[in-house]
Image (cartoon, rainbow, N blue to C red; front, side):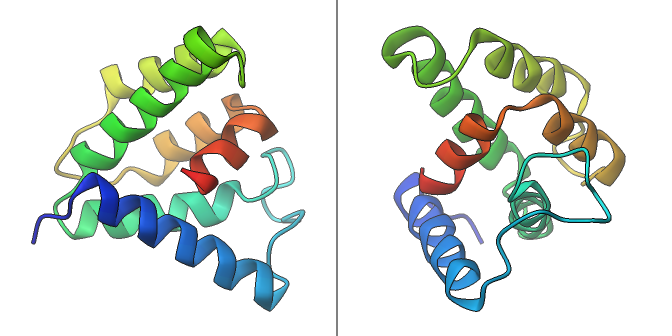
Length: 118
């Protein structure tokens, strides 16, 4: 099943709202060296990979962070470079939690918040 970019954004917004309502957004003790909300984004990405849309979500994140870094200034260029490095290493057909965790550790809180809000 393929999903459109618009549907993906809606899913991310809905999940983010649900997580906020449940009070689950915040510091994750197990993954304390990642920005707040990073583990939830990892879960969303894993779901996309399982649905066969891993390539689509990574491309969407790259485009979002690229525009935010170079056009609007919402995030630093380092955030875009982090997702670019991930994009060069990942397999679009298989979710790699270690590689995804490495990406999340290299993203700023602003980047995580932006990807949530989509």
